[in-house]
Amino acid sequence: MSSTALKAETGLPSDLIANGKVLSAAPHRMGRLVPTDPGIGLEAIRSLYEEHGYVWLKGFLKRSDVLEFRGWVFSHLAAAGLIEEGSDPILGLAASQSPEKSQVDRILMSLVRSVAFEGFCTQPQLARFMDAFLSGISYLHKRKIMRFTLPGTTTATPAHYDLVYLRGGTSRLVTAWIPIGDTPVDMGGLVYLEGSHAIGSRMEDEFARKSLGLSAEEKISAFNRNMTEGGWVSKDLPDMAERFDTRWLVADYEAGDVVLHSPYMIHAATTNQSAANLIRLSTDIRYQNVEDEIDARWSNHWSLGDML
Ligand SMILES: O=C(O)CCC(=O)C(=O)O
Image (tube, rainbow, N blue to C red; front, side, top):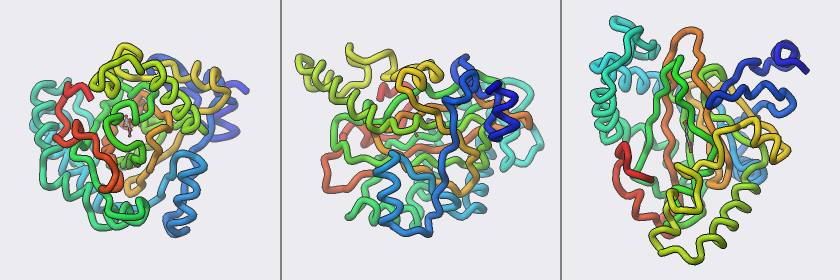
């Protein structure tokens, strides 16, 4: 199927790019992420998560709360020239001029330390659900990441699984990826490699075997000599889908959605090609049962360049 035919027949985008590679060049290597109604109940949600390595909870959070938080974030980043002057911060409309990078970084680091962000991540609905999901008292790692991606830039998270960065504690971790605003597929939200939690688990076993001779500190580092640069599995998404004989699952996310993924599930992001010039904003935060061993390296706020 040609990529134009792909779009016409399946609605899948014909021009999705990640790190310079066109995903839709091999249309049979792409599919849709399957949404889940949070109302189906805990056991059903848990079993979908176990089976697929992810569960995309549609409309889990109140849409207006998420949009309000988006507006709050961009109203602060406006001081660094990130959004178009005079525009509504909720839109996240990218400024035509390049923003002041050092100022953007400084503000972002303040935002991830803010009470408002803490409150967003610890809102009762999420906290109660995570307690139930983790069958006990849930613990939220202090290192909470907030990311924005400007349209027209090549920035896109390469393919990886999260345990690589959190090897110093339990592997019974759950990541919540939360789009802060509508994130249709052309805005470069997360894409998941179908069935890859099994692949991630095999890779982790292999890394553990290779790392036997390393020091305790090196063993848990995502930057040890057995890892690729940055701990990524690959930046070539089409090649990965071919190599592992699977597909990249894409989605049109909306404000209010929450995706939970396994620490072994391979995922990546694509280039933000928003025709409306909108900025992608999201957070990724990690939970575990408080009784399980905690990776102490994640007990501080996220800092740019903290090498985790
Ligand atoms: O939002 C992104 O680009 C990456 C997020 C991520 O890697 C994660 O949620 O684990």
